[in-house]
Length: 283
Image (cartoon, rainbow, N blue to C red):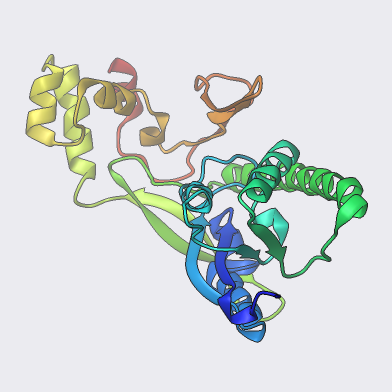
């Protein structure tokens, strides 16, 4: 007897890598909605939805993805199929794609990408690794293009993402118009009126001989001595835009380098300073 379509249980997985992608390319909700319609048209029951936002597909350290993989091993199975907008939502890495594909095959869970042909038998053996390599290649190209764009933003004094250091707040600025008439926004940092004086006071206290504990207790701008040291050494408080201190180095991801590293971009007068240079240098 063939299995009735109504008994097939599907999980949906959606992912976006960056805020820009979430806004301009394939939003999470758009991926999920298309996958739901796909399942409904086939009479499949959507039992679970997993998602990761702002996470690269080049690694597998994704909470939603790992939760889904764990659920695929449940006894009895939590779902029969994983439906994705494209297979590159699951992986941007050849090795991971092949390893997890084999893992899901052992669990008798099929991966169904909406916008790609399905391959079977010997054709799958040949083409799936090739498509995985193409995905990884385009991911690397996209990463290089993104880095170039972020470097340009940094050189123009704009934020490239992330939270500003204590004492500053983000300020959204219109910098142009898109072809469809929508405004283009970029973010600069400006002093936070509630915290700027506390930061300045912390510098003044340290220059006057107060201990780190006393400064933390009186200003509340840091929770420990290490965080306070980071503040005291950050040229952002001079009005400088600093970019590319965390990057992939020697195969390692997220390595922090020094402010004087030749590839670190430092732009003076990118925003209003909080600490005078003579006081900063003294601290």
